Image (tube, rainbow, N blue to C red):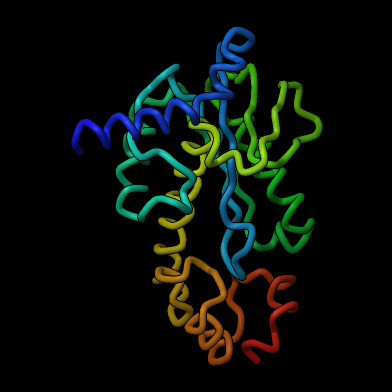
Length: 214
């Protein structure tokens, strides 16, 4: 990376520290929270909670959807190495069917907070508010592109879930989970037509799209 591009990248990252700087005098441990997997037909919803050291520089850190798979893997390792604390929470398809995806997502986030080895003083959360948590929260719309802490949580959650779905592909062949990660692609629908749903399919989700695969 030449000096001009490096400068631009550092300026972008500095802009993504707005909320971290805003609350720095009020909270020692600021945690970012995000989730992945609300939309797929199969697999868990996964939430991550991450506390980064102040002003840590993680080049190319961004919303996981805006980062290539290869770059996500690199950032995952960098975050895990430098983070003050990281925790994962998740809910499987059965729990999603039982209480609905929004409540399952919030529950997964609460699990992630509960598992933190360092208790956050403040939670920066991507567009969600959690009830029954005695920690100050700031909900930020599209926060994974506006906060380095939320972006880090987005990366951790995404890589964790993608790795799980890749492993589940060998256990449940025919749905191409390693490729589609549980989302409704043509190959996935073809697998549903040929095999029917498996243990990790969300029955409540399949009902709404059954004309696409039956």
